[in-house]
Length: 412
Image (cartoon, rainbow, N blue to C red; front, side, top):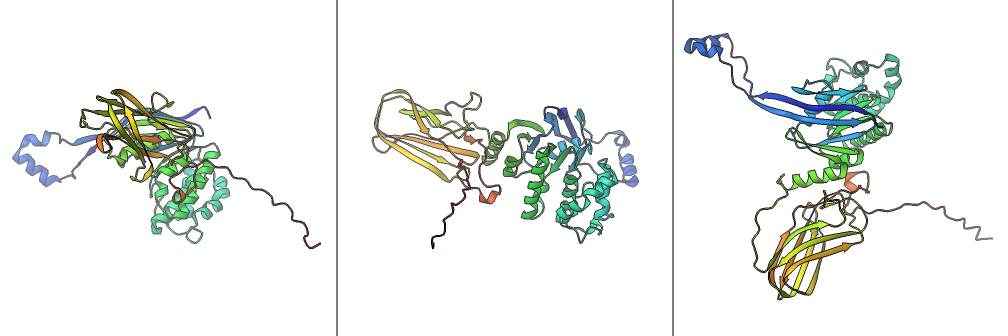
C-alpha cells in the first residue's frame, strides 16, 4: 500500500486547433503564382495546452478520482497514462499491468465478435488464453450479452459496447485500472453493477483512477481526489474536501470566493466568519460530526439599542436548512463576535451559505451579509449507497438486529 505505482512529473500536452485540410496541388499552384513566397511561409495555427505541468503520485491500492469541467484535461491525462497519447513534455512511470476503459470504442475491433474482442483485450493485457477462458463466462454474465457474444461488436448499441468493455477491463484483473466516464453510459442497473465491481476491485488492493462528473460516485469510491482545471492541478487532497470545493466553485459560476465591494454602513458591518477549532488553512470547512461553533465578526461604529440579529443557513439549491434570531440586544461601539454553537451539524457533504443580519431600533438595518467564502461540508457521506435516497441530513446512526425472545407456549 505504500509503494507508488504511478509517478508523473510535469506532464504537458500541446495541441493545435483549427487545422485546415490539404487544399490540393491545384490550389497550391494558384497560391504560388499569385505569391511565390507564400509557398515557403509556414501556416500559423492556434495552439493550446490541454495539460500543463501536471505531477502526481498514485500509490498501490489507492482509488484516485479525477474531477473537473469538460475540456479540463482529465481524459488527456488518462490517455497519457495509458500510453495512447505521448506527452509534449514531462514523463510518467507506471509499475504494473494497466487496463483502461477511456471511451466507448477504445480498444475493440468493430469487425470482431464480442468473444474475439474479449480474448484480444486479454492478450493485450498480457494474459494467457487459459486465464482468459477461466474468466470468460463471468465476463459475459456481468455484461448480460449471452445472446450476442458471437455477434460483431459493430452491431452493438453503445450500452452493449460499454457493458462488454467494462466487464473485460474489470474482470481480467489488471493491477491498475483507468476508467473514464463509463458510469455515465448504460442504465441505472448497470451503473449499480459497475459501482459494486469497482468497489470489489478496490478492496482487492488494485489501483483505480476514475474520471466521472458524478460526485456521489467519487465520494463513495475514492480515497483521494485530483481537481484538474484548464489543464493544471487546482486542488489535490481529501475526497470530501476537494469535491465540496469543486461543487461550490461550479455553483457560483467558478468565481473566486471574493465578493465585490459592499456598501458601507456608518453604524457598522459584518467583517468575517470562521468555524472555530478548524485548521488554520481551512477555517471555512467542516470535516467532523462533533460540536461546532461558528463565529461572525462585527464592527460597530456607534452603539445600538434594541438590536436584532438574524442568521440562516442555505444549501446549494438555496433551500433553507436552519434559521434563528436574537432580540433585544444592547451593543456598544467596537468589535464584537457573534458565536453560534451546535452539538453537531449533520449535513450532506457539499457547499452551504450563511446569511447574517443586524437591525436596531426594531427594524432599521445595520448590515446584512451573504457570507463569503461559503461553508464547505467535507464529512464522510453516511447515507444510502444510491444517490436518489440521499437526503439533506447526514445523520450518524447505528443499526442492530436483536433476536426476538421465545414467547413460549401461551396455550399451555
